Length: 225
Image (cartoon, rainbow, N blue to C red; front, top):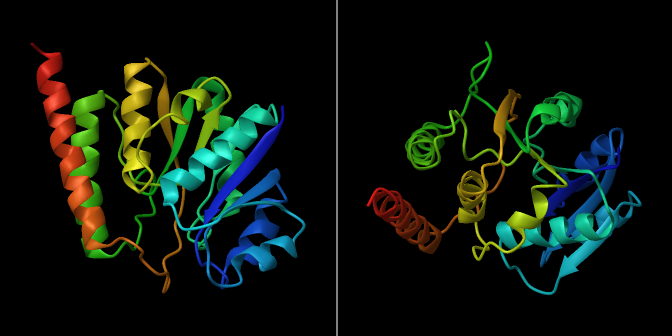
């Protein structure tokens, strides 16, 4: 079973080395440097991980798609997604890999289990609203639709490289695409580490996401006609 962890990274010079070194204990590693203007790329190279770079910042979704395309080309069986900002604990990778045995996509959930996350209130609110919407549209009984810590199977990955979204909407559309293709999506409990990480979500991203949610509701409505 060949496993690779894809780490989309944009200006993560403070954390990228540690994240890569910790992940390498469990799998091969591919860092997708999404047009960083800091030392993310050279620091990642110090770890001897494989690096693919975008010439400019294209968005997290675009970085994930680049990673998946490389993993498919490399004939990997399982693709783990881990954020480059250090929020995800690589020690949870074996747990998620174990869960993928019965699913096509595994999402790490911060809301399953006894330890509740110390998530900033605005994130908890937006995540709750989005998760309920995704649950309504897809039928998946999930608790954490926005978590970027995931495992994707070799069977499922090709379905996600053609998604048109390049920003944070991509991760929600993955679940919609999975539902349309009758894939099995499950969750496993993880812990998340919140610090002083940066947010690159801008007002235009918020507007884009609102438009996406409206299209989701329209898609659901038309499906009932």
